[in-house]
Image (cartoon, rainbow, N blue to C red; front, side, top):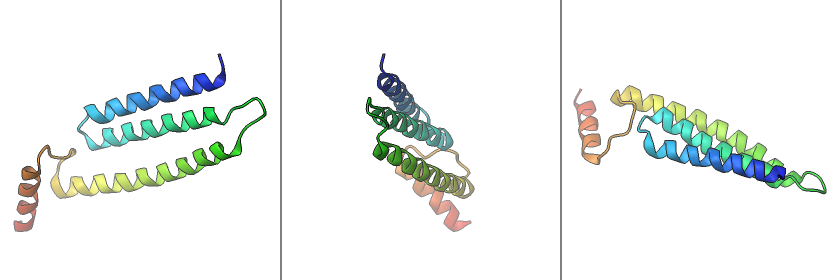
Length: 111
């Protein structure tokens, strides 16, 4: 079995698990973790694509490294936004409909 297939299979599995977690969970931190899991699966697939018989291709490696840096900074921003959402609403998940969000924002404006 070629190393590309191992990387691709593992990356596809991680991406699928991340997508499943993102769909099933309502908690914002769990959704963020699932989104990061999907990104890790994509990075694994790109790493597998860079493997060849002639040597390692530098372009996918550079894309993975850049993607990791962007993923870390986006995760930090998302954590700050989730924390702010919790302090404003007291909820750890997004509301299911827009009307409950409007009620929450009107309560904050009054008090």
